[in-house]
Image (cartoon, rainbow, N blue to C red):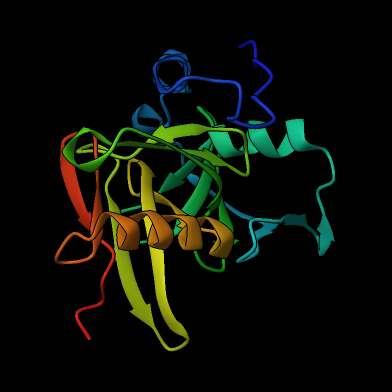
Length: 189
């Protein structure tokens, strides 16, 4: 399966181009593969999105990108790397992806928010990719649904961009529209 080089940033792309690139991305049908469990992968994904194998960071972005395409969330909440012939557990400290860049076009109900993930994936927030705020022991954290139970933690800098946009827009509750869906960014506290 050919892997196309992900964009390095969203600056030069229109949201229409971003949406098309996201739609064109063909992923393996991991939801159809049900091999027997084969053990642990000796891999983990840190909270900052860094992938590790046997305690060492995986330094080749194309390798991380490839592994990310065979990542699946199981019904029990665990994460596995799956192929047609094997299924290996992978430890995930928080979310398997991190949203590292934001592109916003439009205002109010006409706004669209697109995110670039640490793996190069492009996701447009909307009905299939909701944005939600969760409160943890260390405060609020926004997450973006990527695919089939897999989420991206929105990086702190991108969260600040979202908050600035939301505050400037003045919605009550505080939040933003994207692709005809309103996403509250207020904890209600």
